[in-house]
Length: 570
Image (cartoon, rainbow, N blue to C red; front, side, top):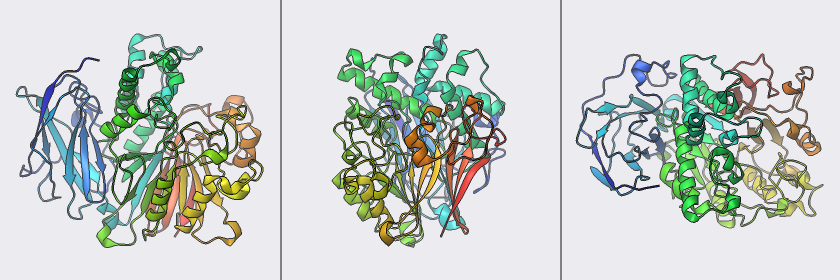
């Protein structure tokens, strides 16, 4: 890919006049206003000037940033506006130079005060010429919102697996335009625009669009959030990028790693997949901080050939808290304390962990999985924070049953299943105490974790984790976050180990079996929502897409409806 030098200039107008709210602008704390093309402008971003929509993220309770990825080859003037008096900002240098087309721009922001919202917009044009264009006014809930309102809402999305929309023998995408838009990720925004115009839109049968349904159900999930929610932030549970899924690359029109790939090609592919992810999330990132938990398909597992390049572009395009409260310098594990520290106890703590980077080879047994000694020590220290609510996030358990990606593979351990304590491993290993998940569960329980959230298995499942020998600590739950995928894996559900640990799937519509309400877990399509308020903490699994007949969610449960709930209490 040819690189061109270009200059981007920022004019951060700290003394700018107040922004006039758009017609229909929502007040603080209210749901998003209905989509209107005339109000929103190019949706979800201006493709003529940017590679993806901007991303707003808090790095801690006092600092945030806006990340901008200009269109390749474009030289831009960018002006950053915010209403005066709402919050103090420091937008950094008045100009910045970039020497390659894959550079991006970070605007640092200091948050001072206790306003529940931060409001901003961007103006942009080609350098030195042309009329100024503008993004819509953006409104982001700040960590102080919980302090002011007593209510926090967080959404957890895991395992969208859009890279699985690669060509299969039975569903090859023929149209070269759609093949290109599938690879770039822009097809998700095509689906999203269709859903914004027609909420009951569904890809036509016998079309290329019907062959890319993970992209459609991800778009439906984003649309459901935009239409019905206003979360403080979103945490992705992993398996979103596809950098660690080289076996899918040929089906996406890329080179198969089995044929040999150079470091330069790995670098180009890592950039492509991270830009793809940013495009697909463009409906969310300008107004909802989105954070990432590492998954086994995200390219940073210790044995991934693209690991160095995957981490490089993750840090460039998806910066996360690093060196904040002792977090990792490379931003692969970190904590969010959602509220100003000066107010002390009461603000919830979210611990995002990396269970992929610390295994040099793919583990063959449950005992081989580890998060590494440094990260483990950090977790123990971080859990010393005194707060009423503590939540941990992993992609999968650090152990699981000793099988592969499904139960037919017996030569490696893939992290499947809700196996959290020593008795869970009694049938699988000689010494359960050597399984790191057993130790981590004890550390979390002793540290007061209310719930540990996991992805990987593409279902919503709640387990009240029993205490071993009357162990100390809060009541603790293990919760699978569900998935926005289109297809639920019924061949997993029918496995003997799956049914031993997860129970019955009730019915699976594609089987033509009689409908039954007797199920112990729920498949796609959905997201998990955590609400903390005066009633305690509640976890809901919410249907976010129509994926009949490939799920065990009954057809009577509509998009936007709650499938299952659990009250965590106080």
